[in-house]
Every structure is written in C-alpha cells, then in structure tokens.
Length: 249
Image (cartoon, rainbow, N blue to C red; front, side, top):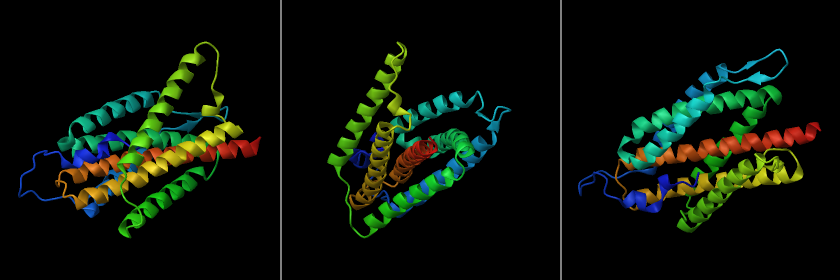
C-alpha cells in the first residue's frame, strides 16, 4: 500500500549510517523484494493446501487462519518501527501473509476456476510495467500522490469501521462486498488505489537510490513494496470475483 514504510523521510534518517556506508540501489531492493515474494509464494502453497471442499460443496478454511492474520499484522507494525530488523520480521510477515492469501485464493479458485491465474497475471503486468516506466524515466516519485493515497486509505478504513458498526444494528453496506454495479465500481476504485500505491512505491525506491539512502533500506524498501503488491493482488482477485459473480446472476 501507499504505506509509511516508503515515506520519503525514511530514506534520509541516519539508521546506523556513517559517511563511508554503502548506499542502496534500486536493483538491490527489487531483488530483495523478489526474495520476500518467494517466501510469500511458499506460504501461499501451505495456505492453499489447508483448504478443503466439504460435502455441501463449500470450502472450509482452517480455524487458525485468523490467528495467523493477526500475528502477521503485529509483525508488520514491528517491522515499520524497526527498519534494521526487517530482514527477519519481513520474512516472517511474508510467510504469514502468504499462508492467509493462499487459503483465500484457494476458496476463490474453487468457485471461479482460473481466477487466481488471472489475478496473478494482472498483478505481474502492473508491477513489471511500473518497473519499466521507472527505468526509462517515465514516472517519478510523488510525495503528494503518496499523501493522497494514504488519505484515501484511511477513508476506506473508516468506511469499513462504520459499516461494521451499522451491521450490528442490521444495516448492511452490501456494496463493500457484493457484485452490484456500485460494488464493482468500489472494487475498481480499490484496484486503482492499490496500483497507484505499487507504482509510487517503486518510484520511491528509484528516488531513494538517487539520494543515496543507506544500504540497510534495501530490505526495508523491498518489504514495503511487497506489502503493496500483495494488497494489489488481493484487490484484483476480489474485483475479478465480483465481475464473475455478476456474470453468473
């Protein structure tokens, strides 16, 4: 996401930096991001294997999945607060997030065959396009855009909280999850925000290389990008499911 992980000032803070310290490179950060994503895929395979179809034709996820999700959230908070420990915390976060997304993906694939492959393909295309655009200088990091995305994210989070509160009184904000026209429009908005976050995060990595950010931030930036990529994949998967459900009606 457009997260505090890749805030511009993060790359200029003197975390164990000396005048002779090596500086980060975009290539180094992207390679480390790939390493995190490999861990995500390994966790995804584990999570996928834990989902089974019951006799009624529905798919059951393991009861401990919510605990993994909660632990992953706390690991993320710890990683944001401790950049120097991101190689370990980021790897554990990646594994946990992979387990959660793998289980969720299996459920979606069970109901709509081929949807996971489509979501992965679109995600790869967005990330690859963003990297190429930065290599050729077509886009640049924008602190203003990052701020807009963060504000939009807080607005969406508030919407979810309000929806949960009203649900307790029998009032449902069904468009948040359903395949109605408004629901699909909401899904498109979420995908657009996630895509912009990924593009801006990659731009932040290239900008950090130019300002000579310390080498330690390669891991930090890599993890931040990985968080956004997972978010993008999840929103694309959700949108494709909304479109498929609308088509099935």
